[in-house]
Length: 360
Ligand code: UD1
Image 1 (tube, rainbow, N blue to C red):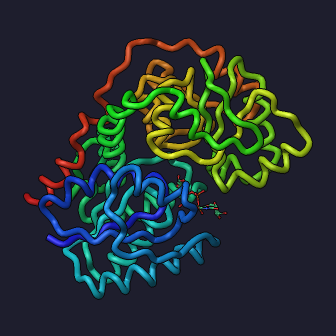
Image 2 (tube, rainbow, N blue to C red):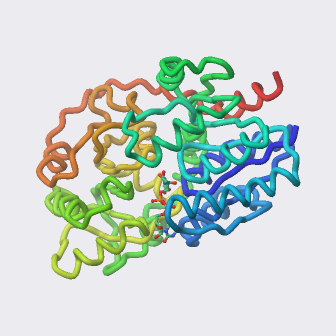
């Protein structure tokens, strides 16, 4: 069977790392990079480190408004589908690359496989929620990461072609986290590129990421979040996503954030190491919430809702408002129930299940 796979943004490279390795044993795959993420440390570094097959085609779409970015992807992907004539297109997650792939394919009757189907935040203001809902509506195979996701689809009347395969990101965490101990702590810390100062070897730290539009669209919100980080009881290592960088730089001109180490975005293995060793993760990323959960690191999520509701049990993940007081309170004073189920996201075999379904 011939499959055209679409990737474009950082978390999709991690998902492809888990799936392409297995998929290519039995199927022909054409890997298309839309170019949504293009900086070396947002894109290439993942392909190198995780041994992901090099993309067969890179559309080099880059940044732009939602309409411009999605429209350019649509045109590029349609051309590829007309030429390659695949049996399926495979899309991951909820980015503009996901929706563009699904829509281009569906219009010319190429069936769509959506990996990470059925997730919902029920906040249609989020671009990611729009991308998820629309992609699910036009997919033929809806491969869900959890039983909650299957139920969400059922509530929308979508039952055909729906399977719970487990989470491909969990496959990746379980597979790659085994490699972390091969290198000493000094190695991981030496790879951090500080934006203003070097990061010393720390005993305790928090790891933080912030990139969602809802948290980064106003300088005041970013200011509140940084104020919180500065008040915590251990240093915060903060890899700054390009979307957040301008506001962070503006704020740093007028404030001295003694407790924060601002660093360039880090690679996947470096991030797994930093999450695993952290006192807590503080984030608005979906992927990081789960990585923290699977690696047994408590998490505080700066959002009003999460698609990964299983992580909330026992306060292993807790939601916080983008307000300094609330973040400090949730990070420093939340009581965590130590009992935890590791079964929500599968057993690391989601990619294998995906291939079995394609065969059946
Ligand atoms: C996108 C996804 C989001 C996902 C995230 C993972 C959408 C709508 N959002 O958000 O769901 O969680 O990727 O990281 O698809 N930029 C660079 N270099 C890069 C990439 C981006 O400088 O390599 C800057 C540009 O200024 C760009 C901004 O970051 O405008 C935002 O990038 P974009 O791809 O639009 O969305 P993300 O915030 O990365």
